[in-house]
Image (tube, rainbow, N blue to C red; front, side):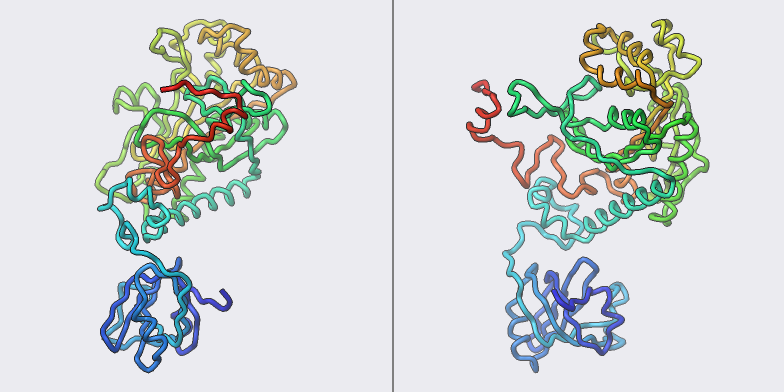
Amino acid sequence: MKNRTPTKDLKEQVGGEVTVAGFVDVRRDHGKLIFIDLRDESGKVQIIALPGRKEAHELAGAIRPEWVISVTGKVNKRPEKLINKNEPNGEVELEALSIAVINKAETPPIEVRGDGHDIGEESRLKYRYLDLRRPRMQQNLRLRHKIIKFIRDYLDREGFIEIETPELTKSTPEGARDFIVPSRREQGLFYALPQSPQQYKQLLMVAGFEKYFQIARCFRDEDTRGDRQPEFTQLDLEMAYVEREDVMDLNEKLLIELVQEIAPHKKIQELPFPRISYKEAMSTYKTDRPDLRTDKNDPNLLAFCWVIDFPFFEKADDGSWTFTHNPFSSPKPEHKEWLLKGERIPEILTTQYDVALNGSEIGGGSIRGSNPETIEAVFKVMGYPMEDIKKNFGHMLEAYRYGAPEHGGIAWGLDRFVTILANESSIREVIAFAKTGEGRDLMMNAPAEVKPTQLKELGIRLNQK
């Protein structure tokens, strides 16, 4: 809209004529005087329609909440006794000269002006485009934007480059269940959506990119869990020619500066971040993501800590060995020989490091195994025959045979981190179009059936229920 003024700028336009546009937040009809609170993304302003402006006054009388309108009017200072000190625009009001209705609106099925906590989550997710109008949700997504922008700018200054990796990849055994995508051209074969860019970022190190990062979408077909979504966002990061301390130091500095810049009202409890071994965390706190806050009632207190020296392997339900974090990790240097020989398996510690915040794991990474022998040894411990290792990870083994620098990295759970900084209780409060805990998109009604012709094109036949 030409010459439209954001409501946040009206205080600088006193005495002038401006045009604003947005949603009708509230309309109050006092007969001769009609007041409209207009809401745009930058704030709100009170509009007054006077009888002397007959056309504007009549239209103001017909307008209802959530209509989208534009108003041209004169910016006036409010009388001293009518100043609202609780509103950014509480010192001014807009005297309507003309009003135009851009679009009418039916009465919304959910209230959008409150914080939404009194509304059932299923209703909020079904009408998410309305739920996102509420100020709290707008603030959460703007906070998320600021956090991601700060990360990008910081890592750019540190010499990192952002590289996108594929979202159609290969299904490999990495822990969680894959979402699979059938191939139409090669029926019976499947892609998988990436659980993380783990293998790609390591291959970028082989390719000679020494500092990579990505704000990455990840996909895991997991059972219902309150703090998980089928798709989520990571800060994914990898560095070449580094040791554990290099990666931890960079990330600690990034976290500290981010909090100081984006959330200065927050207090970091202890600097540098405390370091706790996995053994100590489990014996003292009974968890590997301890909440170290001295005052758990303080919503602005941030207690970061690093947890290190994790066991590389643990027993699976069937009695076999499985990795605790990542099959591509490297053991601690003093335990590398044990891994290669398949000896003293329970005692092997990995170079894994997790960063916890207020009882949540917000990030984890490791120094990687950067040669074929290490990767092969890990999967041999877990009982994989060499044929399966080559089938699943042959591309990694072959790449490493052409030379690879030592490298390591980390992935942050961005949704969890933003949730904590926003003082929210669920990651669904900081994701624009979130799914339920069961993985359903109530707004789009997904997952949903597809046409039989689509299944036929893919060579898929469903078992009849």
